Length: 274
Image: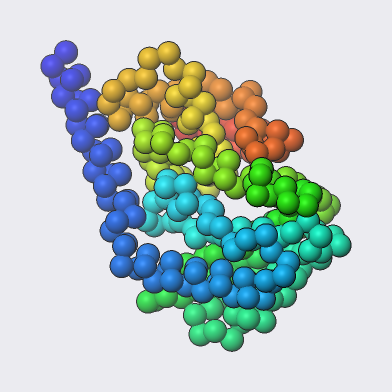
């Protein structure tokens, strides 16, 4: 019994050290430069599209949610546009891509060509020798003056392989609020991200880890105290449910996040958790 208690203490101490080593505070000086660059990107968008936007671009992604780890994170931004700004969502997405391609292509901080991604425009900058990626997600409000009330946006989804182009609805603020105030859940999400980063062949979106971790906490009648016990609880929940669980985007019930994994990927994750 004493050995078991000592083992659990060692696991808790180890996991606390892992969380500490991956804190964003360790890259605070670099983060200041990253954030400065992000603000310049947001300023450029605001200047270019001043008559079309609802508001200046908002921060999104893991850094905005406070569940980022310091070896793999993003400084994503979402640019909300007015409902009458473009005739189509594709026109909106292409306008943002074309502007970024022209505005930043000659900047000596850009390493790769501007990228057309499924719902965003991707830019990679080199700052102090390190890469930092920005994903700029353009979204159009659902109806006139709707965004200021609901924070809802329609996105253009570009075609990929056998999947044709489409549209989807999102709510960035809901995604941020999802993990707001959930300190224990965020710690487990960070640990899962560390594991994912060190296991390069894993096909799990970070958003899925967020949703399933929060679901595991919600379903547990008595959440344990130690961080190892909490992690064990979530690992067991993933193992027992990943093959059948339905995880919907809280901002759009039609976006089933659990469907982003194939059956074989779910099977592999089951065995990893097991």
